[in-house]
Structure formats: C-alpha cells, structure tokens
Length: 306
Image (cartoon, rainbow, N blue to C red; front, side, top):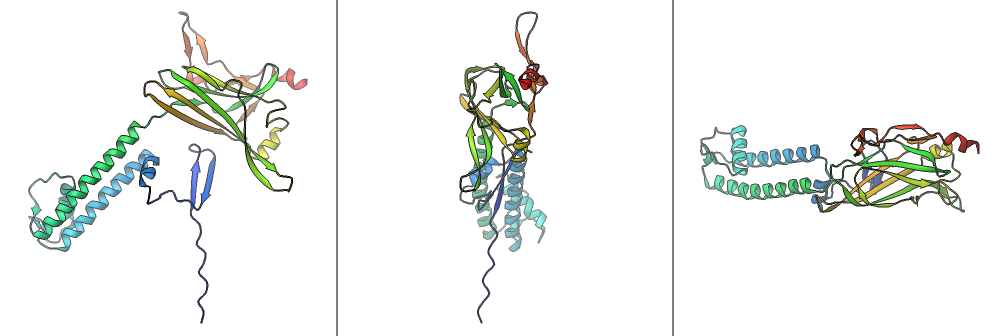
C-alpha cells in the first residue's frame, strides 16, 4: 500500500517595514532568524527585543545547569536536597563567577558541571558585552521628515516637495538625498508589475546641512508622475521613497535615513509654512516643531486655472 504524498510545507514568511507603522513588505522563503548568522539578528532587534532575548538566554542557561546539578544529589554542598531553587541560584552565582561561598561544589560531578558553567558564562558575558557595545556605538542619524509631502507651485511648475531637518545640535556635511517612486505598470504583453523610477531632485546634494532642507522634484513631461491624477495614484497604491545620507563630523561616520509616503500622504495645493526665521539679533533660528506645518499655496489656484 503506497503512502500518501507528503503535504507541501508552507514557506516561511517574513515581514519587513520601512519604518514602524508604515509601508509593509512580506517575503516568503526567508527567515527572520538565521542560525548561521546570529550576529545580524541580534543587531537588528529593537532594544526591548534585545533585552528580552538577553534575559531569556540568561534564565535558560541558569535553569539548564540547575537541572544538571539537581540530577546528581550532593553535587552542591549546603544546598537543600532536590531543591531546584537552590541549584538555580548557585548556577546564577557560578555563571557570573561571583561565588558567595555558602554553597560550593560538593563532588567531582559538581566540580565538572560548575567548571563547564564558568567557561560558558565567561563566553556568554563576552558575547553580550560585544553586542551591547555594537548597538550603542552604531551611528544613528536624527533626520526628521515632514509627516506629509506637498505638491506646490515652484517657478511656475507643479513640484513635489518633502521637507527634512537635521535633528542634531551639530551640523551634518555632504548630505545627499534621493527620491524614487513605486509605480504600477503594465507591459505590452499585458503583465502587471511594480517598477521603481527615480525622481530627479532640483538639488540632490548640499555641502552643509545645519537646519532644514526642502527636497523638490519638478512634475513636468519628463517626470514619472506627470499626467497621473490623485485617484489613479491612490488606486495603484503609489508610494514615494526618500533616502538621505550624510556625514556626522562628531561621529566621523556616515548616517542614513529613509522615509516613505503613501497615496494618502500627498497634499495638493498646499506648501510648507516657514520654519526658519531671523531673530532680533540677526541669528537664524529653525523651529523643528514646524517642520510638518503646511499652509495654502497662493500660486496653486492660478496654476490650476491655467
């Protein structure tokens, strides 16, 4: 009698996000945790996830060795017979190489297990110390993005604008920005696919980035967005991606930031309100609380009429 064919295994599915609560991508056949590359997994975890993993590993290791001690009665001197609690705390003291002295290995078996645990504890502490240092020392760019992108008139042309700001108290240098759009397209054979198109910026690079910077893409005949109305953009789930790269002189390292804008994140006929002003002493002041503040574009109505 032939055996029924095995059921096909469901491929693993991994979720990726450009930023929390934003554009979500799913990938099948790729695991979030790769046993051959635990370093990447540990570094990519959030801080709560990393601390949770650390506590879980610490408790698991101590519980494992505590069970080994309990399996052999008399392996821990001055411990209550069969007490998993005493064995757990003795394991905790041994793994941390503290050794208070009240309890100590009481047999050859106890010495072998405790010596093994000490070696494991030294390696564990070294690994976790290195991972913690990497997470703390990794450069992060505090680049702020406006909540909404706007389509305003600039030099008599409709222009897609995204305002960003340097959230650090220091100046960034050699800042470069790129803007791209994910569009739904159909080939001549009738196949639908999503294509990524660059949106050329009027000024893609600035040598100094101390305050704010408004990224501008002119929507003309050469733009991939030309001729696409808001209804079509919303129906096709058109998304604009903005990436920024700059150098932080304080950290002497490159920093990166990325943000995506969905079809409901475009404001037409609006422009960004001024966020930079001059005080009475002639000093330039940037109010980062106004980075997302918008106002009516006075040039939008005449342009629409034309």
